[in-house]
Structures are given as C-alpha cells and as structure tokens.
Amino acid sequence: MYTEEDIRRLQWQSRRGMLELDVLFVPFVEQAFRDLDLEDQDRFVKLLACEDQDLFLWFMQREVPKDADLARIVSIILKRVQPA
Image 1 (cartoon, rainbow, N blue to C red):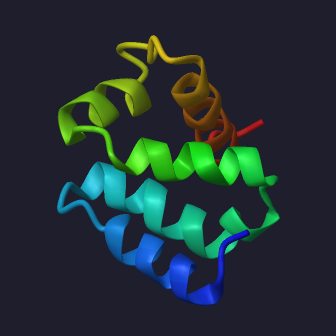
Image 2: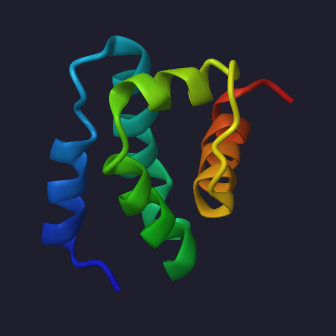
C-alpha cells in the first residue's frame, strides 16, 4: 500500500521534462493512482523507471512494451485519456 508521502514522491517522479509524458503522468497520479489495485500501482512505479524515449514510443502508440506488466499499465493510462 502506498502512503500519501509515496504518492507525492510519485507525482514528483512523474514530471519527466517531456511535455507529452507530463500531461499523461501527472494527472494520472493525481486522479487515478489511488483507485488502482496494488498490482497496477506497482506496474506504474515500474513504468516510471523506464527511459523517456521508450515511454514516448509506447504512449504515442508507435511501439508496444514487450513486458506484459508495462503493456498493461500503458493500456490503462491510454484508455483513461482517449475518447470513448
């Protein structure tokens, strides 16, 4: 379980310096992270450890992560921001 202090840390780590990623990650942590199950929260933390270049390709849907955990959390974030 993640404490509020952990979540504040994640908000800070979500600021990547690349606008395309910042507009996805920061609101996701603020608005959706707490509602995820623990496994998906762990997947998000794992995602934050990835390189920005990889993240950019995944979120621009030019590539799909080979790691199933990363693919799942990328999909969760994309579904949240894409129109239905």
